[in-house]
Length: 135
Image (cartoon, helix red, strand yellow):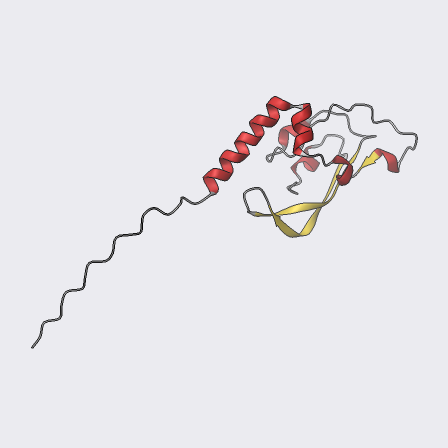
């Protein structure tokens, strides 16, 4: 996850809460990025409009197929934290196999473009320096 905070800004009911980290971690490309120290969604306010999914430039937010999110408690239990929201890539493949394969292909392609080309044969040796004229 990257803490760009676009989803928080674009959310109509303002149910996403993000606090950026103080330090950076490398992303899938190896570029240092801020990550969310706090990423919470208040599901008592969320209207499941999926705007957060659409505006995410990193394709880090996906909608789940679990729709029964009711709880007996009214307040703290309806606030889903980063640990509850984080799912593995295998889980994403199980609920959206076609989309997951497309995203993985895009990420692999971007990572391959980022890698430097392997060095080819050794560069040709410099021609010998001309001999100094003798006097």
